[in-house]
Length: 297
Image (cartoon, rainbow, N blue to C red; front, side, top):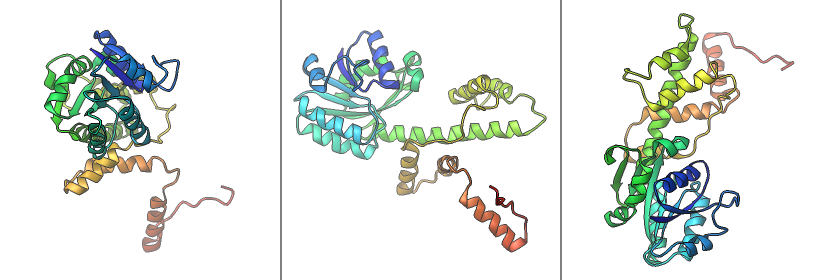
């Protein structure tokens, strides 16, 4: 199958390679000429036979907006656009409508797998019509992990459902990572446990908490036992916030996910104003001692 792929970053570059290894003809575009197959979106459209399929793999927000708008101008009747980035699901309906005015179909695809997807395959959650999804299925079949389709691919529903599913997936990911990290800290704090990494390594087989994320933490601890080379500062890319916001809208309790999001906020504070206030209150009502910053700093 022939397709265009826009965005050749960490994931897009590997996706192009996996698709080519699977026998597809891929024309890739990226602003960086050293990785791009063409110089512009116009050239990409010219190199693809109609009806065309174009996969967009760029950062959510402004970049996705501009890319979708540009594609509406260079593509035409019968073409199909797949947004495989982490766009917010609420944007999908607007993108689908914009493209539909030009006769262009739209699929939203949540993609999980990170840098390992090239060899392991990508978990896919897609939203769109049955007809459009069936048309793109050869692409999905190549990108997904080996094994039964239902174990790595889901047609979650109409447009928007794929990105909603991926949003929740990433919210769950936030909570899982925090739980594993808290477990590591607790193990490291106890002198009886001589090798926290060995414990995590042992958990990779036979235990009920084993998972790919847990295996990756065991790997990280083996490479850097005390995580001395890593700052605790942790960003959030949006999906965790969106998950909590949607949970509030739907009145669904997600305390674990919410706590993991706030833990990331806490990681960015050199000295927590909240905990300063708690210390001050303990001193005020109970006379508990506080640690004061010396005048010399």
